[in-house]
Amino acid sequence: MSSKPDASRPRAADTKKVHIADTQMTRQNWYKHVNWLNVAFIIGVPISGCIQAFWVPLQLKTAIWAVIYYFFTGLGITAGYHRLWAHCSYSATLPLRIWLALVGGGAVEGSIRWWARDHRAHHRYTDTDKDPYSVRKGLLYSHLGWMVMKQNPKRIGRTDITDLNEDPVVVWQHRNYIKVVLGMGLIVPMLVAGLGWGDWYGGFVYAGILRIFFVQQATFCVNSLAHWLGDQPFDDRNSPRDHIITALVTLGEGYHNFHHEFPSDYRNAIEWHQYDPTKWTIWSWKQLGLAYDLKQFRSNEIEKGRVQQLQKKIDQKRAKLDWGTPLDQLPVMEWDDYVEQTKNGRGLISIAGVVHDVTDFIKDHPGGKAMIKSGLGKDATAMFNGGVYYHSNGAHNLLSTMRVGVIRGGGEVEIWKRAQKENSEYVRDETGQRIIRAGQQVTKMPEPIPTADAA
Ligand SMILES: [Zn+2]
Ligand SMILES: [Zn+2]
Image (cartoon, rainbow, N blue to C red; front, side):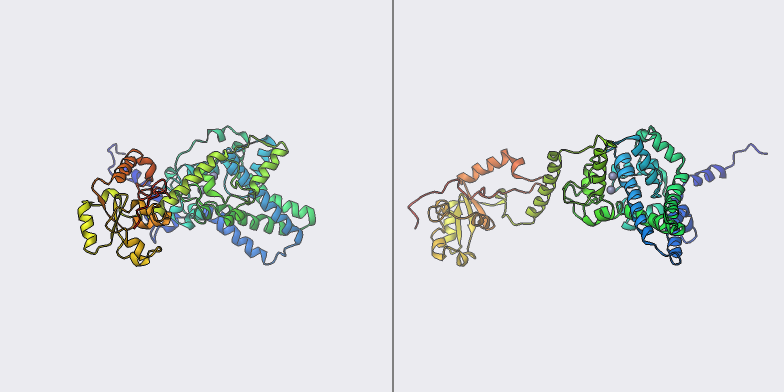
């Protein structure tokens, strides 16, 4: 026996510390990256069910029972695991909590405690490395890759689950999880079909195994499809999306952009015509006295988010349009120089102190060539603003794309520039783009100017 420190030891301990998920996958070690227990539950069991289905005829009663039990166990996940325990979006009486812990366990998606902890991390760290099912790692990964491949639990973001640890139903279900899974996942669906109409094997295969498969795949879609397909009416900085297809598949969990914005709202769909059976069920439980304290964001708050997102979209559209060279980037022209250039044949027209080159536009002028030519080389502010014709908003917009300079001392421009400086936050969007509102173009006078000196 030697007391000499073994130089290789600390290194061995260090390599032990490296989680398999943090190592490169190679041809030699790929099988170590796979979570074989989950593969068995998520892929192996369904395959065995499909094979058995070949020699087990499906009876109508069993089919109906399988669909009913699909809804029971699916709602155990959406109304129980998700909206009640992960998000506390309402409170449930003890009998309802026990029911949800049982049927939710029958969906075979892990214990409430484990599921809700990961889900809270998903909300807190959406789309980052700490998100246990980040869609940034691929659609398939967010669907089931995160369960099939081993994950280093230390990399999942930390969340507070003290409230779950204080719920005796949650603690009981976590401790007895395997019993719950076997009992509610397979035995109960088999017992009902067996004792009810003698179809023991059919109950096991269809209402048990294959029903588990469909519930699992449907609810996994909340992590994959709901982060990939659809619109983002409330915020587009992260991946969650709203789509009717996802809602149909997931018992109403498809309005996921809304859900990530307002996670503690017991609803996913806020419009009456949207499909959210989970919300309808929770509401019904409230009528029966089983659920209470249903949380709901005020529509004022919801609309704010919607308006801000619309604003962002408008800003993006505006940025793609040609609004003309900003005034402060235009060269300053002397009046005499302006007059001189028009005499030399350039089609320049000064309106409100801004010089526009309309040479190529003269032939297209809706009011005729003569009219527009009469303003060349002059101050056409009044003519343009009612003296001859009170031009449309579209005309002012088009005019601004032809600007080439500003007249030194052009009074209105100076006023407008000052106004722009004072109110800079009102006339620029968050990316610094100018906002030119209808009727507020610099060439536009507030009132039509009636003059007689139109040529
Ligand atoms: Zn999500
Ligand atoms: Zn959620």
